[in-house]
Each structure stands twice: as C-alpha cells, then as structure tokens.
Image (cartoon, rainbow, N blue to C red; front, side, top):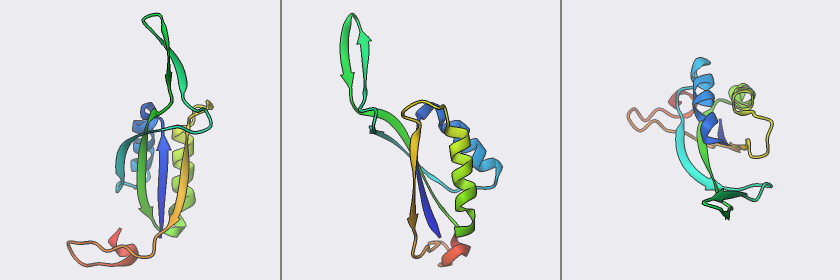
Amino acid sequence: MKKVEAIVRPEKFQDVKAALEKKGFYGMTVTEVRGRGKQRGMRIQFRGRTMEVDLLPKVKLELVVRNEDVEKVIELIVSSAFTGNTGDGKIFIIPVEEAVRIRTGERGDGSL
C-alpha cells in the first residue's frame, strides 16, 4: 500500500476529486493548507498598495491505495490539476506498512 499526498490549487480541487471518484477512488482526506514552492509567493495590488503574499492557499489530498493503483491515481491527479503554470502542486508517494479498519479490525488491502 502507498499513501498518495497531493497538494493542488484550490480551484482545481473539485476537478481532481471528480476524476478520482469517476475511477472508483472515493476514500480521501482533504485539508486546506497554505504553502509555497519555487514561486515563493506573489505580489498583489490592493487599494493602490503592493503587498507580498508568501504563503498561498492550497488543498492537500491524502489517499491510501493499493500498490497497483498508484500510477493510475498519479495520472488522474496530474491530468485534472494541470494548468501549466507555476504553483500547480506536487504529489508525494509514501509507503504504508499497515492499515486497519477500526469498525471490523480488517487489515491490509481489505481495509481500504
């Protein structure tokens, strides 16, 4: 099993969620986060003044999937979150040793 963590633009979240659900990936944890990458924030004009915003709003999705589903999930996220601009996001793949469904005590892939 692998944990897929994706950080995407807030305006692309619904597209990513819909693409994942369409292919049967329903279980996910979603968190509104703030961060920055290479773009190091941005400058905005507000009431005639320039302001530096260095932590931008993002959405973090976390899914635990079977090893054989990892590439499919990556492709779905990339294709639905892509704008071609700096700040589209990142995907991280993390090994998961074990998963346990609390309600039944079921372990491993069956707990997903």
